[in-house]
Amino acid sequence: MDSSTPPNSMDRHFEETIVAPNTAGVTATESSSPHIALVEGSTGPHFSRVTQSLLRSRLRVATIVMFGITTIFFIWHVFAYSEQTNVTWNSEFLLSYHAGLIVILGVSAYLLCPKCDVRRGVLRLQEAITFGLPALFLFLMQINAMRICADKHGMVNEPTTGWVLLIFIYALFIPNKWQRAAMVIGPMVIAPLVLLAYSWATDLACSAIVSGSPEMIGEIALKMVICGGVAVFGVYTINVLRTEAFHAKQLGQYRLSRSLGAGGMGEVYLAHHYLMKRPCAIKIIKPEKAGDSNVLARFEREVHASSKLSHWNNIDIYDYGRTEDGTFYYVMEYLPGLNVADLVHRFGPMPPGRVMHLLRQICDALNEAHSQGMIHRDIKPANVFAAKRGGFFDVAKLLDFGLAKPIASTEDSHLTQEGMITGSPLFMSPEQASGEGEPDNRSDIYSVGILAYFMLTGHAPFEYERPIKVIIAHAHEPVVPPSEHVSTIPHDLEAIVMRCLAKSPDDRYQAIFDMAEALEKCEAYGTWKQADAVKWWTENETIAECPQPDPMDETLPVSIRT
Ligand SMILES: Nc1ncnc2c1ncn2[C@@H]1O[C@H](COP(=O)(O)OP(=O)(O)OP(=O)(O)O)[C@@H](O)[C@H]1O
Image (cartoon, rainbow, N blue to C red; front, side, top):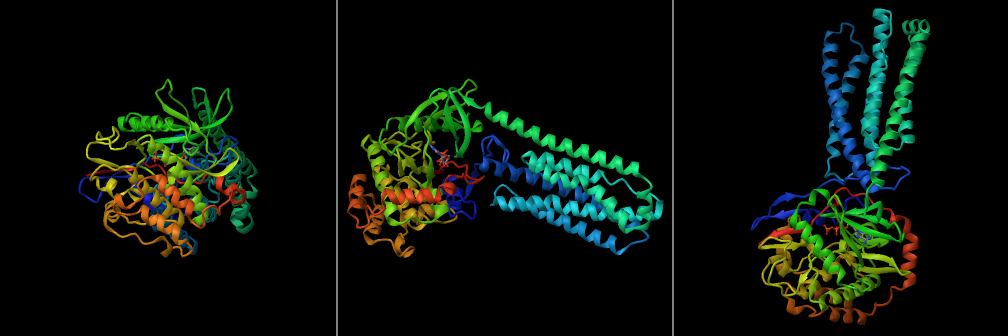
């Protein structure tokens, strides 16, 4: 998922919130950090998404530590400056640099907050700021101190302490492969020697002292090489331990290989069955959610509902179980491809032919659920996958039946407390959002309409900051026709979308199959051929398959009390 100002950031915000009765405010926000992480570029499985999150949080801690250390030394520096009799231009410059450094580190720490949208390139820049600016400062300060010391006391001061500190802070906090760590730590190791060489070359007093103490140079070199070696070995050891911890993560007959993403209640991993060797996707309840009976019930419902369905466009469930340590998991077919939310965020709105191609398949998937008396209640772009299956590209798969419930059921789901409505506000029908009356299959049809709108225009029709405004808009606000956003949308397709989005269920298609038939009658239906899908995936495969980091993508559908 592209983390650069994601158009669905609001969607995520909503999905993370729990809104109290008759209030518009957010009362709780769910967020947690993934618990398995590997280093970037390690030889083990690549967890770029998780690594990014790890890098951001570690970098933030490192920046705060550097901020603290720099501030303490600044206070000391100010006192030293006020007592200094031979104040030089250098001393004044260094004091200003020091003050500026504190401000820059403080701002950097703030910009690395968990909610900030930080991309990989920006993270690397922040890393350079957190360690590069203090290193430069240390270098300049030591040159100055060395000259003063040589002039006043006829000796040079010990230049290694600051560098040792910097090296170990870097090694401890920044997740790295050891080679990269060595490349960053290397210059820090030689910095004290460069410093001595510079002082020797540019200052007469220093030159005499340095020339007369070769054993001091040897001792400094030895100290720094040992320190650098230990730090790089430490980075290597940390990586090995992380990789071992990951490989030790086995579930029954399955071995996990890499993270596919995380939702509000669980994390999904690519895994392999030991004997059958086929790839599969395993969804595991997050450890911190394992004690929540609502989450467990929703998880179970998702498995039970999905396993009743056998249509090609619904997800295949292979297994459901619990490990000895109590971790609940279920195993499903692995879908190479992207969910529609990621597809649109990363590649923009889709052409009408492709939208119809995917929608038509979703109609089939939903038709099976509806014909079994089940409504989905959580149709949204993140729950629709465009996958490569059976040699075909753009095979649509409907996921996440965690909120499914029988049509016209009067008992509320175990997953919601009495009087609560569950779903994602941006994609919720007016009747589901208001909680008035019992949503039926036509509520899903409304959500499919929003899904279509999103695929065609790149956003949902009602995107407001506050969930309550979105809900009111679903109930009362007229929908802006999608062609007003994208003029190339054909009228017949727009008419279908607008009919799905009718406020009253009676004005929508009464059955999902009616919508499927309407789609087939559209002029542009069938214009997206397999060859187009193959071409698209071939051109975009590497980008599409590379998991994009998005540390904030850990969400549960909103629960709204009525
Ligand atoms: N069978 C699968 N194959 C490949 N990727 C999958 C599969 N199932 C889920 N994913 C990916 O794993 C991520 C997490 O899925 P999950 O269903 O937990 O998330 P979600 O639907 O966003 O969350 P929530 O359960 O809160 O609605 C998503 O990015 C999804 O695209």
